[in-house]
Every structure is written in structure tokens, then in C-alpha cells.
View (cartoon, rainbow, N blue to C red):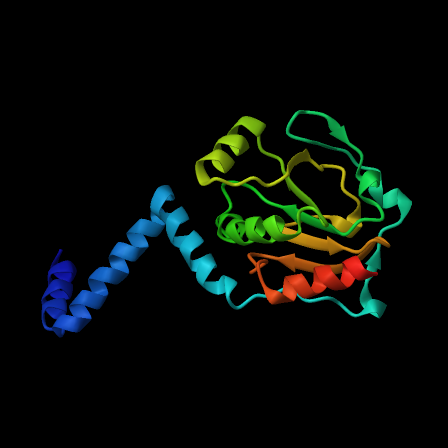
Length: 202
């Protein structure tokens, strides 16, 4: 008790701006402990850092190529129909793994929606989650998103294995992975458009 009183007396001698800074610091820490505010704060921070992250293509010599055997996994569309990833071959594919509870995923979704609006008729967008469709549909409806969502993907080949989300791959028509990004990215960017345009012309 004496130590606490001594600490308080010492704190009272600090300048006003220092006291204000202390209060903001402790309020921030408390908010990070509470799930609701923590999600809002971390999502906001991810949005700030989106401006620092842009996609780029890896050198041709460094690209991983998907073979026929790498398409032997199944996902379901929003109607519960089984989709064969082999149908994605010979297309430019934007493959994204995400979840509604993931702040970096939430932060980049507006950018994904914008680039989907611009290229959805030319590029195959495949956003995969392991959540329940009803939960995901409610999330998308509340935010006005119209993204193509797929479910499952548990038996993925090592070449597109996911250890954290969001993880996004851009795959060329020949099956080569030209871009892999982990974390929130500014997908609605000139860099993304340049990649898509170049791949679509091949």
C-alpha cells in the first residue's frame, strides 16, 4: 500500500502532458484486452499499414508451378456445390484465404472488393474460408460485399498451403504462382492492375 501511495505521489508531480499521455496509454491497453474494441483497433491499424504493402510479381526463375496433381482438392461454393479446382486451370486466379474474425482480413476486404469489381469478369476470384456459410453471408451482407466465397480447402497441396491468414496467391494461366502475400495488402492498386493486365495478355 505504501508503494502504491508513493507511486501516486510521484505521478502527481509529472507535467500535465505526461499525465494525459499516461491516461491514453492505459486506456489503450484496457481497450486491447476487451475483444470488441481490440478488433476495431487492430483492424484500423492494419488499414493504416495497407498503404505500405503493394503486390509484386516474383522473378520467373523463382516461380512455383502448380502441376495437375496440385489441383486435386475440393471446395464448396455458397450453394454447397462441390467445385473442382481443375476448372481454374488456364485462368488467372486470385486465391485468398481469410476469415471474418481476422482483423487484417477485414482491413483488406474493401480493397479486394474494389479490384474484384474491376476485374471479376476476367480474373477468377476464389476467397476461401473455413467458417459456416450463414455466419459469412451475414458478415458480407452487413458490409455490402459481393465477393465469390468458397468453403473448405482443408486438403491443400503444400504449394498453396496456408499457415496464417490472410494469405493470397495470384496464379497465372500456366499454373505458376507469380505473387504470394501474407497479411493485409492494398489490392486496389496500380501494382495489382499491372500484374493482372500482364497475365491476361499472356
